[in-house]
Length: 115
Image (tube, rainbow, N blue to C red; front, side, top):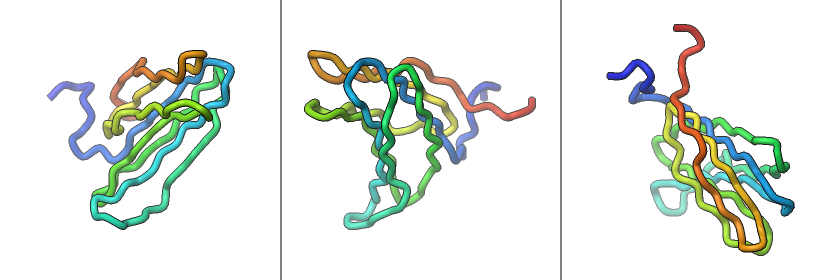
């Protein structure tokens, strides 16, 4: 096992979004139950400000999965990949005349405070 690899039972993931452009952007997440009809607390929608990255810490659930997206009025939402627990992932979100685009820009394990 590599020293920088997170443990298999990592319980948290950090997802950051760095917005660009003039349109108002929103970062949202929802817990989707593995059983139909289940509802869970923890859903969020937070506004993004250009040039100011926003990070959210997500906790692992055994009965639900995270669904993440970046939205802006009038354009199709960008669906972000499911969080990788034990990692910090950063995305860039750009709004422009042609629509909304999202791309992963960084991926690093969440390390211990002390080694």
